[in-house]
Figure 1 (cartoon, one colour):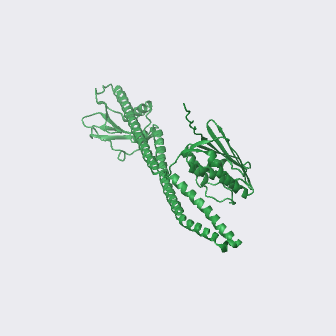
Figure 2 (cartoon, one colour):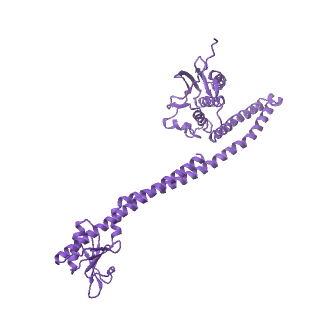
Figure 3 (tube, rainbow, N blue to C red):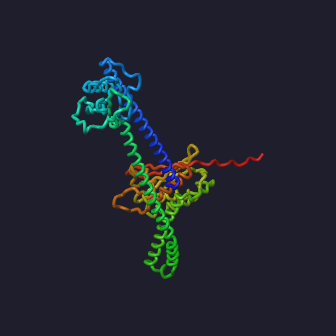
Length: 433
């Protein structure tokens, strides 16, 4: 993956994550505020209802204003201006809270005029049960100045009640945190894999370039050795010289494949397209492929259009991919190899097919044959050597040209590779007036 692509993924991912976190934070804060406001409103309504009923029972009038004062987020002062019975207060509080569906614990205290302090009343749960509480160990409910008959109510479980109302929001927030953590972990894995892939690629590139000098030396030495009269006159030495040259050609071909792949991945290659006739390009390739096929007692046949096949392509890369496809067909076309090349023109395209009678490829491997370094598993048998770069190079060049390539195969029925190449209109000669 290119450095710019990695950078875009990181930046866009961070922007998306920050946006999602910002929206989630705003949602949580807004939901909290709404639930807190709802709690305060219900608590004040319940306390006002209690004050109104106490005043009615005492035949007293409620103050015109400031009946319920919120001293803190969970502590309220209620002014009644009439005497307050503790048991009756507790009962009315429970009834009002149940009526408003405010299932929350509370504790209360009543102002004592004789001591000028708050007399702790008790702690009541949402299940309408009073817990035995020592007034000295209960919560401190501060008094209010300027009032004579009033009581204070504190809701110690207010925060837990609000969080309980926000269970869905909390659940979604946890999911979001896990998603962010997974994204961060995935990003670290991507960066680590990118670094390892870069190191591997640089190592292969450097190693391949280092092979060029000794290969050139081997080629020259093998040529000199083969031309020596003493070696040429000795059948055993001549066979060794030919073996050295053949192995040089094989290794040099693999090195060139690696270098070509490296140049295509770096974007360092440029297609030099020109108008060419495939009928002029194919004969040398077919002649060479037929000779190699017949060396293995195989058979190569072709059936191509009997007319010009004009293409707009890079002749070097087109030659390379056709050579690679023919080479694959020869290597994997069975023993002995039987290869058939067919081509026909339809819809202003050349449909070229290279078919062999080899063992075929299972469906789960057909798409992966175009991946770099991928080779169809053959167990412990490795009759055909290679790096798995040929078809990868073919697909890269086809993509650069905008061509279509696909594989058609089945185990036991051979393999066919289909190319679809657009034809280039041949300009008509000017007709003299």
